[in-house]
Structures are given as C-alpha cells and as structure tokens.
Image (cartoon, rainbow, N blue to C red; front, top):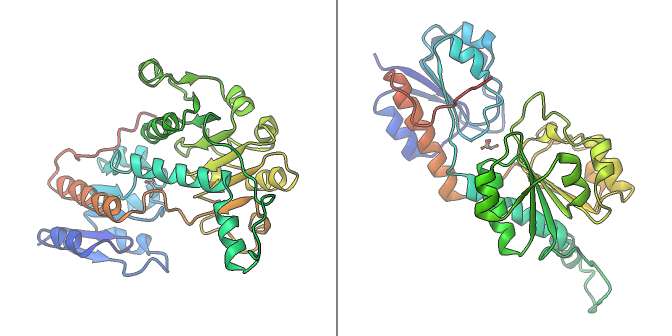
Length: 320
Ligand code: DGY
C-alpha cells in the first residue's frame, strides 16, 4: 500500500506526478475554500501545507501514522513544530530559495510606496491626467536614504544587498547580532527604537512568534520619522493594524506597503483600505513562476525523505 499524503492547495502537476509515483496523493483542488486538514489528517503519512493553515498538537494526536509535515514556504509559524518533534514527526520548510525573490518584492513595495507608483497608475487610469503637472505626487527619495531592516535573516540580508545598490545607509536589528555581515556589507546593528527613529524606510522580516506579535504598535510608529515608510512582508500580526491606520491617517508616517495583513485576506471593511498612502498586496512575496516551482519541488523532497524515515533535506531546526 502506498503512503497517503494530503496537499492543502494546488501545486504544479509535474510535482504532483513526482509524488504520485510513490504516494497516494489527495490534493485540495482549490485555494478558494479552506482545506479540511482536520478531517483528512487521521490516516495520513505526510502533509504538505501550502497556505498557512494551522497544524496543531491536537490534530497530530489524531494522526498515528503521520511522519512528515512540510510547509511550502519558509515561515512555519502555523505548524506546531515543538509538538511535532515530541511525536517524532519531521517538519520541513523551503528556505533560501525565496530569499532573493522576497527581497525583490520588498524593494518593489518600497519603491512603489516611495515614488507613488500605484497612485500614479490610478491617476492615469481614472483619466485624470489631462495636462503635465509638476506639482503632483511628490514622493520620498530612496537613494542615499536610511533603511532599517528588522529581523535580519536570509531575506533581510538580501534586502540589505539591494539597499547598498541604492547607496543607502543600512541599519538592522536582530536578536543575535551578525558581526560578519556588518563587516561584509558595511551595515550597522542598532536597537529597535534607534532603528525606528533613524530610518526613512523600515522593512520587517522577523519570524512570527509571541515575541513579534504587534511588535510595531502605536509607541513604535510614534518613534518613526514623519517622512518614513513602513514595509511589512513578513506576517500581518507583526504590525498592529489599528495603530498603523491612525499613524497613516494622522500623517505620523508618510506611507506603508503591506504584503501581509491581519487577518488574511484583510476584511473588506477594514479602515486601512480607505487610505491612499497605503499599498496592499495579497501575500505575493515569493510569487514568481520560478520560485514557486522550486518551492513545490523542495516541499516534495521533504515529503519523500520523511516518508522513508530519512532526515528532511530542508528540515526545520526548532530551537525553542
Ligand atoms: C513564506 O515563505 O513563509 C511565505 O509566507 C509563503 O508561505
């Protein structure tokens, strides 16, 4: 009998076919409705989560055969990896492959917010561009500005490299300092409050945890410069949405660009959607043809190794 796996959202056919050679594959056919993982898990050997659907200890307890869970993504905050480890269930993710891709998106958001690209496009599409006006849509200078990177992991590192191409001063904040990166890149470690006070652009890349929940709230937004722009491409709950709304509405900061929201999708009535100094994208950080294909294959590699009882090629090392 082939081992049984469940894939929580569609992945490319070529990857499904690889898995189907050795597994019985059950794939939820759409991203429009939530996959019923709780109903499926009891007889699974492997689980691939491609949204951020929670996988809890309680669910694992109903799955005596479960050997491996993998995220298709680098973030695994939705999987209780500590509890999985206690049950000898391997947990994997897809790191590295998406760092440059997500850093590109960080810069796309930063530049769009700084230079009013979305507002400019809306202006033209609304047929408001009837004469050249040198006095509209002035933005913020990116080159030679100061960027503060919060959460300096692999994605933060890739953002720093891009920032140096724009001749920016790069500040970063990370629990464990990286003196090697400071030397290699010429970047400076500062405490979070200093970073917020000094930066023209603040980009967020920490993992989601109880420590980073609402890391950026009213007090932190109050420390930022009035010309500053906040970019969140990590997880929505890292920023307090109500506080961000007030800071943007009152002009306490100049703008924000979010690739992630709390919740996702954002409630259509959310006050943030009424602002024109805010850009929101629907969680597109790693969404390129090339990277999403690689992520699906890496997740498949994790499943195949885990089913054989081998160490996962991209295993999550849970240190808590
Ligand atoms: C990630 O890699 O964690 C992204 O959020 C996609 O899941």
